[in-house]
Image 1: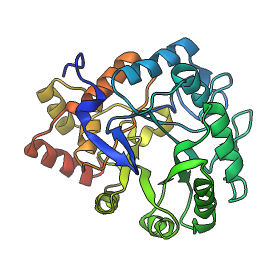
Image 2: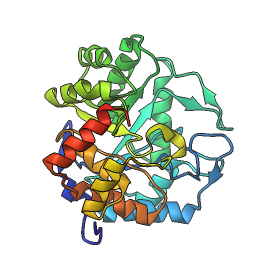
Image 3: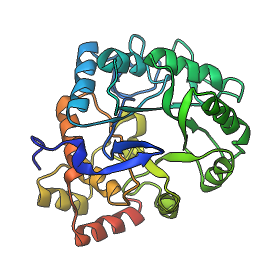
Image 4: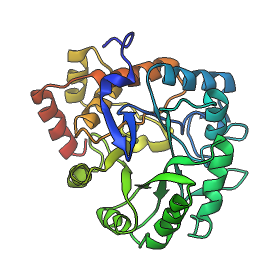
Length: 302
């Protein structure tokens, strides 16, 4: 499919609280380095290239960026790149960040932040981005334990004006219910895609019923996660891609968007051509038969 005249606006819109975003956004995890992300010896990406990609994303109508203070390599950080490329920020640009995990200056992972430590992480994101408030902050967790204390701490920062809206990442349905009793949740960011967590299909639908955006990560990379897509697509998926003159990655993105109007996409890349292709996937409309084929593939975990 051609990407010459397609912008992120062709994907439709959704509201994160009172903030309207195009459903195709941009994830910045891959910007600070080439190759695998979130490892200590990651090779830094060319800074000018990363800045060009960010500016091109906005030119293509992307107004929803996903980032985190722990997205960095030895000489690059995603937040610094965003600040350098896009400040002063457009009024309609929504920057979503996440807190909870942390890495030391050498890139090694630290224990997840306690409720008391979350303010420091929020302030670090504010400093790096050059903002006086954060549009959306996701609490990212590991495990099934209660999040009430930590989410409550973020709700306090929201009341103080440092955060506009709150979300959750890597969570289970009971976490959403627990958080909603404390403060409104505008988005859930979980791993999801064709063949990835089909057992979460009901969770995805339930988020939509509550007016909560569902924002899949690794919807292209799948099990490749931080290392990226592993290649080797099924014949069924390849057939759908050929029918549309599209890439398998575009079909994967389009399928996630077809899961509901509340589903957003945040594919990341450091390549301008991949960026344009990802944005173009927001205009790819799959037929009922194609969706049935891909849904069956999804349920098989393929």
